[in-house]
Image (cartoon, rainbow, N blue to C red; front, top):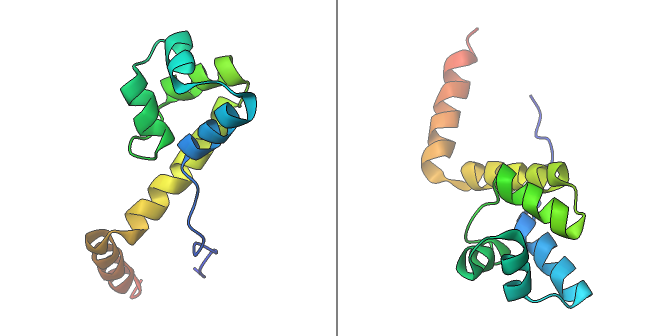
Length: 103
């Protein structure tokens, strides 16, 4: 299989939410209160230190009208990029590709 254009560093979905908050002049504290999560959890998401979950994606969708599926797709791309960048995973994938090349 050819390379599928994985060179670009994907955006963490927290950056999308953070940009939306800034555009609407909504504080992190106000959003956290409105959706029922702690300010520290929200801050970790917005600063790409914590992944979004299906639950938080739905909360952001309800509060900001950002489609949850779009946020989850962004998170998945981010997760795959992180996994590909992991040295141990890269070594494992290389070994698997060599092993199955004989098939």
